[in-house]
View (cartoon, rainbow, N blue to C red):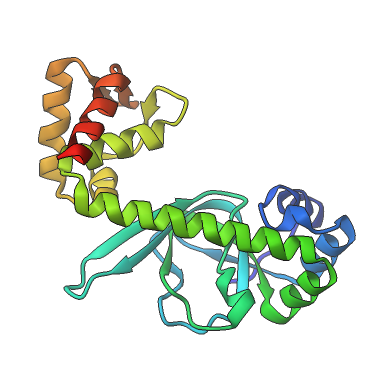
Length: 229
């Protein structure tokens, strides 16, 4: 769905994006004018695995999840992306089909840049092409690590890691238990039991504001032990 575009605001967002920051100010301004704004509602797909990759997107507002599915039809979360992430960059290089689903976790706004326009920008400024390759390599390493953890970490290890990643440098996680369960591929009931166990141990505190991490060292130790077994 198209919406109005704040040109100055979008140019500022592009200047912070990993790939777009390598482009000159003039090239970014040109891409903003050439690009098309779109909005995806929470729970809806920006694009699906197998779709034709004819454009890349810059996430301006919201949050999206990169995911794929197993042969049994189970969704596997690979990563979540926040503004100003660049999405679908592989399509810029090969024009092939999408390798994963991109789903909006909450209502999200994007700038859609057609592949031809992106290629022209990269050909005019090779440094940005190197940035694109570096960003794709980083994404691939992250995806490999996520898949490895999905196979090697038990429920406690996956839950501990998700809480630490979501909290970042802070002390709290505001995701609901249902959302946490979906992100680690577990049932809400199992997540709830584990959280209450950790609450009884004094590792976390649960309240209306979310989950507060009280013993990050205990959670990190649990992850190390899970990986060692």
